[in-house]
Structures are given as C-alpha cells and as structure tokens.
Image (cartoon, rainbow, N blue to C red; front, side, top):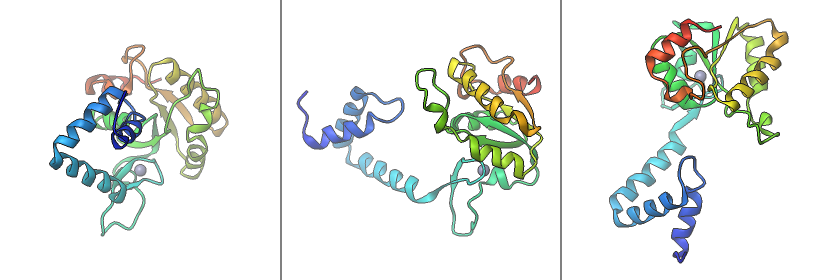
Length: 201
Ligand SMILES: [Zn+2]
C-alpha cells in the first residue's frame, strides 16, 4: 500500500500495540491528521503518561506521581487498613482494576506482568516470579490467591507459580470457581469476582 513515510512509521508503531491492527492504526493516523486538536491532546497525554506515572516497586501497579509523594510505593501497598498478609496475583494491571472494582478484596496485589504461553517456551522468563518470591519471604505473606485467567495460558501460569512457591510454606489458593472456563479476569463482573473470592480454594 502506498503511504507517506510518516504515516507508515505511525502505523508501524501503533499496530505493534495490544489490540490495534494495521487497519485501525492507519485509520487513526488519518483521523489525527484531520483533527489537529485531537493530535495535540494525544501528544500531551502520551507525555503525561511518560512523565507522571510511577510503577510501584512492591506490586508493579502504575500510579500517579505527585510533588508531595516521596515514595515509589503505590497507595494500595501503603494502605495500612488492608490485609498485608494476603497477595492476589494477577497477570496484568487491568485484572487488578477489575478485582478492585468488586470492592470485596482487602489484601494486596502483585502483577506478574504476563502469562505463560503454550507456544512460547521462553515466556516463563518474562513473568516476575523472583520479585514475588522475595516479597513473600520478606513480608511473611500467609496466602497467595492466584487470579490468572481461566484459559490454557492462565492455567499454565497458575501451575508454574504454584510449583515455584511450593517450598515457601505459603497457602496457595486459586480464584476460579464461578468464573466461566475460558473467562478472563479482566472481563468478569463484580458479582462474579466477589463470589469467586469467597469460594476460592
Ligand atoms: Zn503497589
């Protein structure tokens, strides 16, 4: 397809993002070219993301930085009213948001940063298993709730995590019952999450 170089570059960058295909990226490029104010807004919000978001050193959830805030630990991890002996293990940030929205979970979280893919034998190296083990040991965590999706990759990830934590003497449960097979945590509704938390095993 004939495309001016700058548009081609834009499409190359944006179609490498999750959930955006080549066609969508191309359409987006033309849209932004014709809507200069949107283009400026987009640039501003990208800069804002880069400058003002910190990733929590404890759970790896990104949060808003502020001048008064000296810590690189997120508000959830700092919240003393939460149960600090339980960790809910999720694949990604949006899973954390879904569980948090259910308002039925009062422990801490840990974002694994990915899942184990049945077609990528190296994928287990990409998840944050060592920082997790370190945290469990240091903070004397009593329970880890594995909240990976009910998919093949989610099951593989759960199995791998369970094996890795086996000798730490921590109780391991899995958030599963009530969430349909093939279901992703991110898309579960609050009632389903609440029920699955209650009946974890
Ligand atoms: Zn945190």
